[in-house]
Image (tube, rainbow over all chains, first blue to last red; front, top):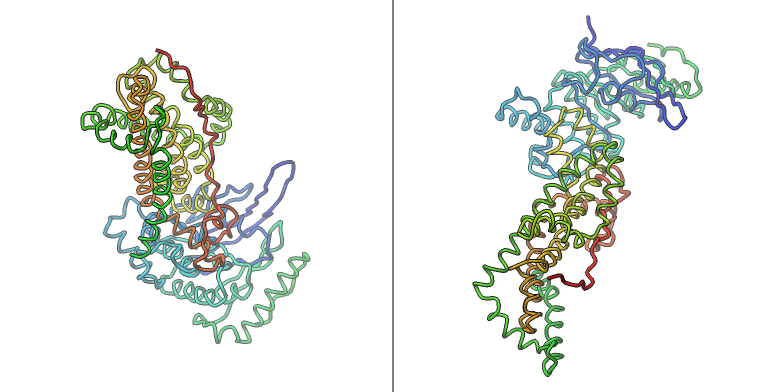
Length: 267
Length: 303
């Protein structure tokens, strides 16, 4: 079976003012249709660089990204990105409704009525149907990030990329948003690539976790998360298996910082 | 309602004091050049009759509108191009620095050579002075478009005209409006100056005529009228700005309250344009001040 998203031998080197920084050395992984994959790594390990290369926002120095078999050379139409900085990603001069609708207007195949429908559905499924007429800055941080998620949903992307989307919201909102992502993923059968520096979040959300090494980045380990599909903040997080997995990922990341490897977790 | 009354009181108190002061100070004046305010105000309705409004004030306002509008269109258009491309900016910067340093009134004789002494000349003079603050502020505004917003737009395929219209110009609009506001006062000044050269009607022309024929109270009424015109235009401008930049005021107020300033103490002096946490709103460059390239010293009148 062909992977939906295939990253092979990806390398990114920043060059400037006489300094050569190799942010990403050699990354190879793939995402199957309908998967929820979390990328986790120590801070400063080039996660954002990687995601921008995948999104077609940055040109890689070496290697390639394939989306549905086609090489990504610019932002592909079938991809949506949810950024960490929701306050800078939503357009403050537009109401919530218009923020969600603007990307759809670029798809000429969509009728006005269909656009309206998609916007309403997307806002409904993130629980913001009432906020359609508000401006983003009238909403709390968590709500703003929901708007950004709704915008991505309405776009109906083949792959949804999320770049540390909950790093700037408080802990409780964060838990809610994690559950929202899990729910949307299960309801809509979406394919999500979720980047985070939070180990618990990666294990809680993902079906598969890719542990990245410190910069220059390679894939340190691929880990299947064999937790039940039905997860909730209360029970999943205290399950023994959850603890094992998170401990393992934690050790891997510590090892990644030192540059060594830990053996597979029993199970 | 009470709030509105209070605001009105604050807005009108100082003008009232000044008028009363002028009235009292000039009441017994016998100086020809300093007529009592009473005399000036009595002359006002006699001078600014319907005919004068049509033959002098209207042409002035029309020239101002035409010059201002063409400056706005040209300034925003070129500013957007210059602001969007680093190379173009590098090539244009020295020339812009030179051109904006040339005081526009100096251009009047030059423009007269090319555009004659008609309305075209006056509109060109107004436009050539107004365009700089608009252009430079647009350049800054377009340059300062937030990188995350740009990437968001790119990743959703918002490019070309849609990007310009929905992202770039909207994001630059606070700065563009700052430029437009500066240009408005420059425009009024240039309207008057251009009419002092080789004109046969207009506000500037009329005021100079009164001065030359020693109709001093009439001259003063002209100056009062110019002031009133300025106030009126600035009110109109504020109205438009309030509509176009409502989101910006809201955004700044929201950023401020999120930064923890106690409610009710949101003094405008605490509004910082820079260095706000990335999650609360786009960082903005301060509107650019142009060193208003205007020399308003008295100059010898040709004629």
